[in-house]
Length: 85
Image (cartoon, rainbow, N blue to C red):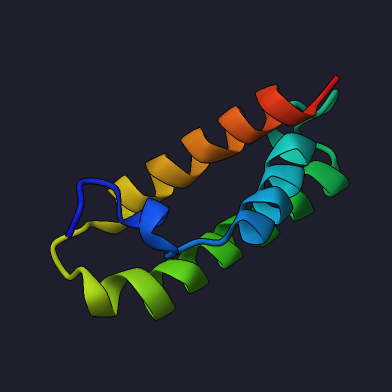
């Protein structure tokens, strides 16, 4: 296993784009306490957990959820920097 299992296709580019959209809606929300921001965060967290449970945990049992979660958030930030005007 490489040091970065995500780069091996654990999470696709399309999924990162979708997650980045959700991440943007709550992380950079004008009102982070708004219903829309809370729903986006909830959807983001559910999707990250689902990806971890289905793809990461079975193949890489030594990778903790917290590490995967942090890496996905980092990938979302990078995606948004590159793809947001």
